[in-house]
Amino acid sequence: KPLYIVAQVAGFVTVILTGIWMGHYRGGFAWSGDNQFNWHPLLMVMSLIYLYGNGILMYRVFRNERKKKLKWAHAIVMISAFFISVIGLKAVFDFHATKGIPDLYSLHSWMGLITVIMFLLQWVAGLVTFLFPGLASHLRSSFMPAHIFFGLFIFTMACATALLGITEKAIFSLKDDYKSKGAEATLLNWVGVLLIIFGVLVVYLAQN
Amino acid sequence: KPLYIVAQVAGFVTVILTGIWMGHYRGGFAWSGDNQFNWHPLLMVMSLIYLYGNGILMYRVFRNERKKKLKWAHAIVMISAFFISVIGLKAVFDFHATKGIPDLYSLHSWMGLITVIMFLLQWVAGLVTFLFPGLASHLRSSFMPAHIFFGLFIFTMACATALLGITEKAIFSLKDDYKSKGAEATLLNWVGVLLIIFGVLVVYLAQN
Ligand code: HEM
Ligand code: HEM
Ligand code: HEM
Ligand code: HEM
Ligand SMILES: O=C1O[C@@H]([C@@H](O)CO)C(O)=C1O
Image 1 (cartoon, each protein chain N blue to C red):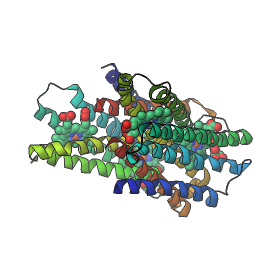
Image 2 (image 1 turned 90 degrees about the vertical axis):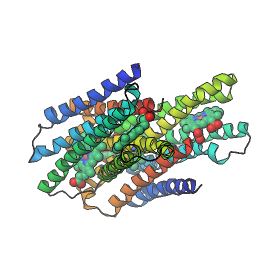
Image 3 (image 1 turned 60 degrees about the vertical axis):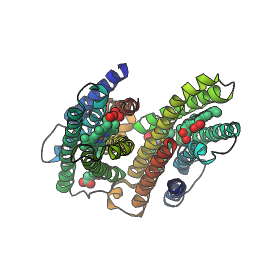
Image 4 (image 1 turned 120 degrees about the horizontal axis):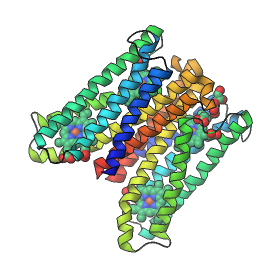
């Protein structure tokens, strides 16, 4: 219970600080031109970190709800996360197109694309197995460990991908100033630390 | 068993390709001057990825060995990994000192330092609990889940830290050429992908 509160605070502050980083230090948000990029970090952290983590934790929090209702809520949170992440990806692909920057050259982008694809596959597999049409009960329970393992693995991949994105953006925008430990550099390093705290706590709470 | 072989190949190739990246593309190894840095990635991947992962997998492979012998082997592999990682850190701190680059400014460096410190604490806790002096048997077994959780968490942190390091080094040395998808860029992205494959397989095999 106290760990759950720490997780919620860490996750929420991660989203807020990402918004401050992009909104205040990087020039704000727009759906065209140079600032279209800035939607990318914010939407990815909102979807594939914060919503994803909360979608996992739902089963731990609303233990007393009816199972059917919970399954629907879990599935809806996850597909919402997916759609928001697609908008976040569109932001960076559009930005690259307008700037003439090639796509999918970085380790971050490879990991990111693989993560989003695995996330979608996991969603379809979860739906088909547990909700609609739903497999026979013994098949459902034998699939559960795999569902949990992949769910947590893909979540860990999302966290690692976000940490690489933070590092890339830090170096691209601050250049050698990253080394001067200024306010923006310190802020963005803390976004990474809080994201890690949220990440471990989600994985820990899901397993206990 | 086939997954174990895939893990071993992925881990081994990760080390080799890191060596080729630093040895062939980045000018080779020296214990002073510009090339002292190049020891850092190689030694960190050897120690905190490859040896660490193999130290975890030992209990799965040598199931039939006497427990006492296995515990010693596990402890010795882990402390060797620690010492090699300290040499790897010395390489990059020395490099920063000779170049006048500030220490501990990046998210990578914060995560790296925290990871190595947690690794050392885990080693001491493991030794005291399981080997010398060793706690009462019921205390040992109640500590075991924590030992395994932290052991796998610190391993995941080491993997994520290495991925950030790869990204930093890619951007620092290739600059805008990273975007051209040349041989070195492709090589270093694959180091990251193989490292992730090794990482998941180690965590998966440790839990099954
Ligand atoms: C799980 C979350 C994330 C995913 C799945 C993801 C995915 C991606 C993908 C697929 C691209 C390639 C776009 C293209 O090639 O046109 C990209 C680019 C980029 N992302 Fe992310 N991203 C995530 C989070 C972040 C965060 C949090 C940041 C920064 C704080 C960030 C910074 C960047 C930057 C700077 C680029 C352009 C350089 C490059 O292509 O690597 N990303 N991202
Ligand atoms: C990308 C989408 C999804 C991801 C990443 C995901 C991930 C997870 C994770 C990590 C858990 C473990 C939670 C815990 O132990 O506290 C879980 C549990 C579960 N998920 Fe999903 N899930 C997804 C989609 C779905 C869908 C569409 C369904 C369909 C109903 C579903 C049904 C379940 C069920 C029944 C559980 C078991 C809860 C329990 O009894 O402990 N999941 N999911
Ligand atoms: C788990 C493995 C690793 C750990 C624990 C680690 C740790 C560290 C630490 C503590 C520093 C700071 C040195 C200073 O401030 O003087 C550093 C710097 C650096 N490391 Fe790593 N490292 C790891 C792996 C790697 C890898 C695999 C690469 C590259 C392929 C890499 C590239 C760099 C670079 C470029 C720097 C200098 C820039 C900076 O300070 O962030 N590291 N590393
Ligand atoms: C940094 C150092 C260490 C790390 C990262 C670490 C990590 C781990 C991990 C991840 C496991 C789970 C392996 C599996 O389930 O297959 C494990 C098991 C174990 N470790 Fe450690 N360990 C460390 C040091 C030690 C030390 C010093 C001891 C003292 C003997 C020790 C004793 C054990 C024992 C008894 C097991 C249980 C094996 C079993 O029965 O499954 N560890 N360790
Ligand atoms: O791929 C990218 O490179 C930088 C670029 O603007 C660098 O100068 C950036 O922010 C991207 O999205």
